[in-house]
Length: 256
Image 1 (cartoon, rainbow, N blue to C red):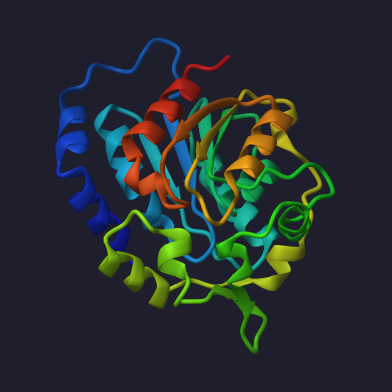
Image 2 (cartoon, rainbow, N blue to C red):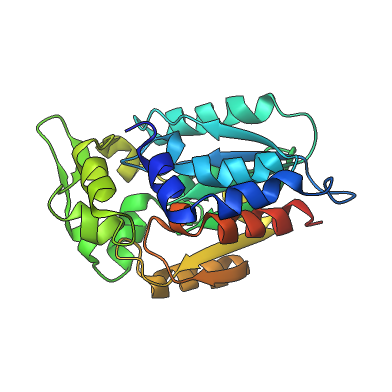
């Protein structure tokens, strides 16, 4: 899994985005200097590497959280450990399942803003299972199945088209065959706090997403009164549209 998405980004971005940011100016006055990135299910923290590289080269202190994906509590704890190491204001960002995690963990006083990228956004008492049932079935969610131990995977045959249709086929197929499972307990656990009620919130909507339907993403964003940005990408838009996602995070760094 490691470096697969980074390799994809190298191919897709062709150096233009990453190299262009190397000579950027200092951070704007008053901006949060810290960015904590929380990955989704089925992939690891390297899914955020393209965005992290852009932001790091602009002067931000970027942390990639390595979620164990064993339970909501475990992923929230991993995120809180990362937040504890930050010095000052921090933007907390989540992709996909990571949106559930930042909803719970984002009440930390260091968190100055939240950014959801093609992400689930529960309210208090809601779980990923609740949200999945409330929206229209998608190609991606229909392909999620448990193994004998209760760990959830996306059918490898469906994964490339459902999750990463705009990545090179060989990368999408490799990701499909090297998934990190999400424990079913995480899928069923409700959040008991929703940090977006009290934090400036931003949402990147992926208009070609086949995991979380774009209309559902828009409902999440509207419910949170989030500032929205649309990208014409799949569920893997954090890789394919890394520059756009990074730009939203930079806006969130200036939120008050």
